[in-house]
Amino acid sequence: MKDERFIVTYRIEANTYEEAKSIAWAVQVEQTIEFPYEFVTDSYIKDTITGRLESLEPMAQDSPYSTVGIMPNNVIDISRYYVARISYHVDTTALEATQFLNVVFGNSSLQPHIWVVDIELSPTLLDVFKGPRFGLQGIRELVHTLTRPMIQAVIKPMGTPNEELARMCAAYTRGGVDVIKDDHGITNQSFSRFKDRVTRCAAAVHEMNEKYGKHALYAANVSGDGTDVLERAYFAKEAGATALMVATGLVGAGWLHKLATDESLCLPIIHHPAYSGGFVSSGVSGIADYLQLGFLPRLFGADMLVFVSYGGRFTFTRSQCQQISAYSKQRVGMMKAACPAPGGGVTDVRLAELVELYGNDTMFLVGGDMFRRGPDLEANMAYFVNR
Image 1: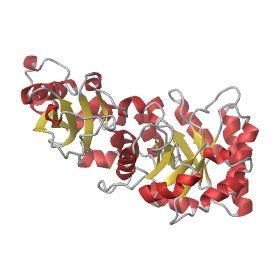
Image 2: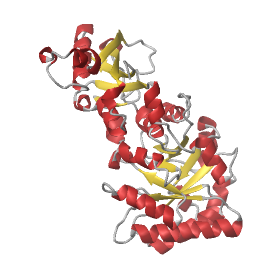
Image 3: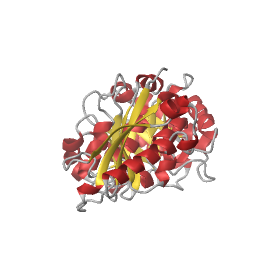
Image 4: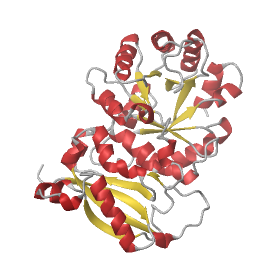
């Protein structure tokens, strides 16, 4: 691939420019050869494989990276921050999602005062990681909801018998829901065996779609150990599930990419952020939330991106959520826009406010609030859909 390279931008905290340059050099080496550079004699390894510092600048006062990983209202010393753009040869990624992330922030994630704040892809990476198969517009067409904001419902809580979960699916579908998903905590427990649950829920959604002229999707949670992910995905499709859900923080990004590119599946995919908080929450190092929750899952093939909205029980701010939503849809080559799916704090009284912030091209995830309106889930869903 000659010298095709991609660029990762890191925000580095240091006392001086020279210290920042030393940290950047450590990243260049650590993320590639992880070997004493002075002992390298092969010119290809030295000049091509080792990361290359493209630029290192003090961070500007108005930099969009100045709030990444910083608690709201915290006052920071901007003079201690530097922005390093480091390029890596595309061959270092093996063209695999797992190794790509390893190059972006493998061992350096264990070092303090380093944040990944941007990624610029090369043509080959954009060709390998094609993004969503369906994307925002494709999901709209599948659920026959072409203009209004969409609604995603969850079957819960953990411990509920599968028969009741299937009844929830039926009620949501009659009420006009666009997408129904398993709760991320319901997998294959003794009280909710995967195969039985998926079979019942898929059948309930299919029956109500046919009977009432609806077009709801049912997404089975296929997160699991190792190859269980793929086995569950194949079973779910065979049983009639019309979408899948996976949490890459739990199973790894490679499984998301595998599900998205498997031509035998061809199902829309929901990405759930469980176990991702440690990467994006305020601290001494991490990955910008808009990348971890808005860009990377989309890159690896997720069609719908769940993230926590502001104003609920989570601590994300309005501006954070707005940026995550923007990254899920921003233009990146020919990649399709993904559908942002904010949840947590989505209530009927806040829906107008949230629509104003996120726009119509959003799928609002309504969880506990669906139950607070009373036991009639069909009526509750119809209320949200018609808001």
